[in-house]
Image (cartoon, rainbow, N blue to C red):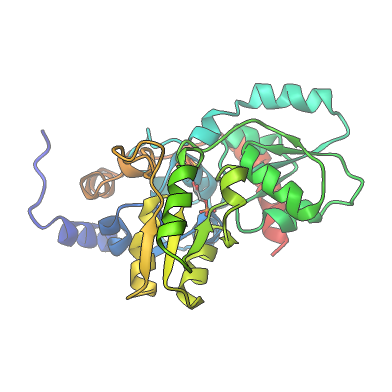
Length: 311
Ligand code: 13P
Ligand code: SF4
């Protein structure tokens, strides 16, 4: 059993300075991790922050594909992850050899991959997107261009509807967003007249059909901050409530529960693997460290840069 300092926050801060490290955290992290981070953001904002940092070390408090993205974009930095097992159901649902088979069936199609995928999948994609720029990325192709969208079927269906474009959809889903309880949503709406429903596009289409606003984590935060309403029913991972409460104090924020109200199904088990203890150990030991084959990195970089170039 590791002996940990009593003042963990102070020890993390000391190591951050002595290692010249930057701590990046996604909105789905626990509140204590968000509070200690240098920068909190959605997937696109975190990728940008990782790309431009000049710190020697990036401690990435999110999941594996996010840390991989940081390494691809900024290979000169040491990229640490508090827990290497923090994966993602979307990345797991789309092995590169199977996506290659889909590509082989549709040789004229261009591949748009959601950033929630492995470096190997990025490497065989034409362009990457996140939940905040997916429509713009899809619209960057000529209207008659055949497209494959991977690996999130729900985001793909949502973008297809918004852009009016048919796409071949990979059948992956997020284990958190697919579990939201529609019946509970209807009940909460009827008990809270005037409440606005905000949802992440990774949710099922039937749930999205009932949302007043759909957007990435940062877009949901901004909508709740600026919108006057008696209450907001929040259909995304519960970690977002930490910043929502800070940016919209006094507003009634109601997290939508999953199918089983007794489980914490609206919390991502991968995101929640990270702890302050693991962050301290990672900064102390400079491990676990994300390494990547240079050939793979360069192949994965091209579609990421194509996304970044869209602005
Ligand atoms: P965004 O950060 O793009 O909103 O995506 C949410 C998510 O599920 C990250 O894994
Ligand atoms: Fe993946 Fe869903 Fe967790 Fe995001 S919330 S990391 S999409 S499993």
